[in-house]
Image 1 (tube, rainbow, N blue to C red):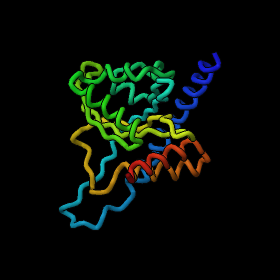
Image 2: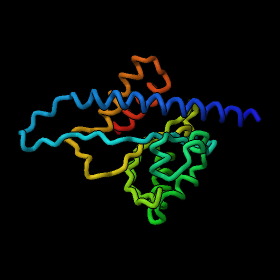
Image 3: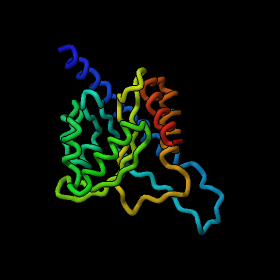
Image 4: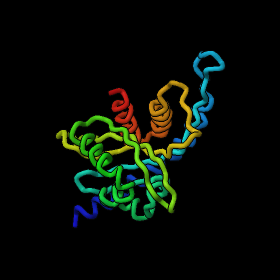
Length: 200
């Protein structure tokens, strides 16, 4: 019973964190749009169009997979269930059958190695085929055991252009500044971990 109550509290905290990060990201988009482009020749410049990102966290040992509204929409999952936590099997079942082995293998690799994984796969939510990009890494507890697998998803569209910089790092830098300003220690810890994983 104590484990169930702890999981419920954890689910509530994670849902709050995801909401805070989404609010921070909305502010970050404005900050990033004001960053001057690199000093490349004008004809070679490409504008960075920031895509809408979904956030997720998977409590590995308890097999509770949480995500925000965009993650739910892109995978055809119920937001209320996802906020409370669903099994990773439920998430993988929403991925195109041909992509499921690669996604499961990517999760296993990230959990066992501690390295960041980048995955591409298709989902069929709301009868629409969506191409998804996922970046995530597995955090470890004090004993070095896999604890939380956290990351982002974006829908790949033709509107996403990169200017040669690392958008993942830019997002994290902006979100880290906001989390520190607001005194959100948990968000700061996760974002720092994301930045460390991006550097490897």
